[in-house]
Image (cartoon, rainbow, N blue to C red; front, side, top):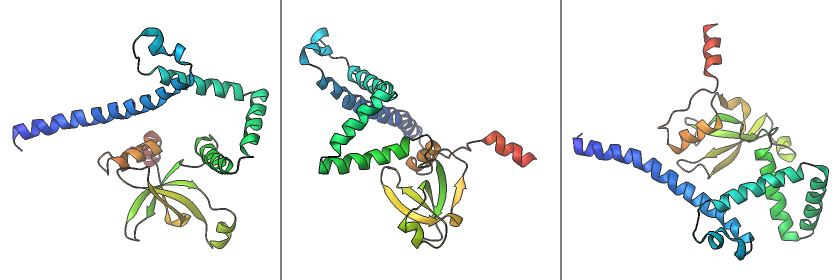
Length: 211
């Protein structure tokens, strides 16, 4: 490889991750800054200070989220949430959207939930190929009754965008559980195999092999 080309590629490897990181953070901060619209225009930081400070809305958003958690952690706050949800339950379309999103978010962010806690290898898209997947739970109800063997529900993300993917029920006996974290698995998928995942508990694994 010619030196000029080598230096150019090296420069790209430095600037591309940095540029994408800045772009993503700018988009997130810009979206969260929209919370300033909830305030009266007279008290906007831009009006009071005379210039724009990016990130003020982000601080406000995080503060609102934190205070919401503090308020709803007690009995009075929980009653207010039930009262609010009771109102939403009377609106047909809003009810369907709200409770669907709430059920998914409760499952994903619950500390006791099993969704996206395990990284698996599953045979996809054909029996001779393997794909990285995330276990999202177990089939229940009529689905579990129709399946003869023990199955698990998995989400197989696409690369390099793990937001999209496929949802399947697969036999548990035909999956391989990996000793890696979900974060490392996502990096592995986004990088299309360039960034290898690390063992979640390397010391324990090494000790077990020595014993």
